[in-house]
Amino acid sequence: MGRIHRAVITAGGTGSRLLPFTKETPKEMMPIYVRSDTGKLVLKPVLQVIYESIFEYGIREFCFVVGRGKRSVEDHFLQTHNNTSNLELKSLFKKIGKSEIVYVQQPSPRGFGDAVGRSKFFVGNDNFLLHAGDDLILSSRNNHLRRLENAFFKYDADMAFLVTRVKDPRAYGVIEGKKMEKGILRVDNLEEKPQRPKSNLAVIATYIFRPSIFKVIEKTKPDKKGEVQLADAVAEVISHGNTVAVELIQSEKRIDVGTPESYVKCINELHRFYKK
Image (cartoon, rainbow, N blue to C red; front, side):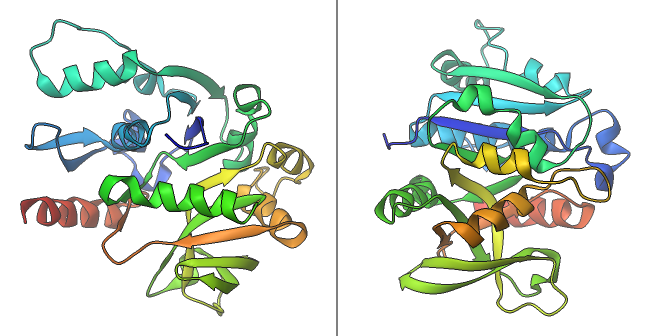
C-alpha cells in the first residue's frame, strides 16, 4: 500500500450531454465492458470500475461527492444482498465491507472545484487522490496510480496529475512543461481548451493534492455560469507551486464517457480490448 490513504471520487455532474439517458441514471453509473475477477466479460457501472481500481491499489477510505438526484450511486454501494449467488456482486460487497465510504451532497451543479471543496471535512490534513467519476484509466496492476504517487513524493510536489497525448487538444486542458525524466514533466502552464494548443498533452482528471488545495479553491472566483472550476485552482497552484505531470504509457488507455460519441466509442473499444 502506498502513502496516499484517502480518495475523493466526484459524481456531481448533470450529464446534460447524455440526455435523455441521464435524466434517470447518472452518467457515472452507465455500464461499460470489463474483465471480471472470474475472467468473464461483464458490464459494470463506470463508477464501480473506478472504485474497484482504487481499492485494488490499496486505498480503503473513500468520499463520493454526489449531485442532487443521484441516490442510485449511494444505493449501488450499499452492502446489501449478502446472500446473493452472483459472484460479481459478492466480490463488490466484499470490497465495500472492507472500505470506509462517506457521501457528501453537491445540491446544485456549481462546478468541479466546488465539488472537490466539499470533501474538505473528509480529507482533513492528509494528502489525497482525486478521481473524476466519469474518467477511467485502464492500466496493468494500476501502474498509473503507482507512478503518480511516486512522482508526487519524489519531487515533493504540491500537486501531481496524469496527462495523455491526444490528436486534437483543443477540447482539453493542455499543459506545457519541462521533461524531468521519462514520462514525468514539471508543469509550467495550463490552458483550458486553447484554440492554438502549445502541446498535445491533455490533463486527465486524476490528481494527487496536498490539503492546501482547499484554500486555493476557497479563493477561486466563480466563472460566468456561477461555477467554481477546478482548472482555475489548478492553474493557480501551477503558477505559484511545484506541479508534476505523469504521462500515460502506450499500453494504458483512457476511457471517457462524457459525450454520446465518447461513450459509444469506449463501449466498442472496450469490447475489442477485452475480447483479444
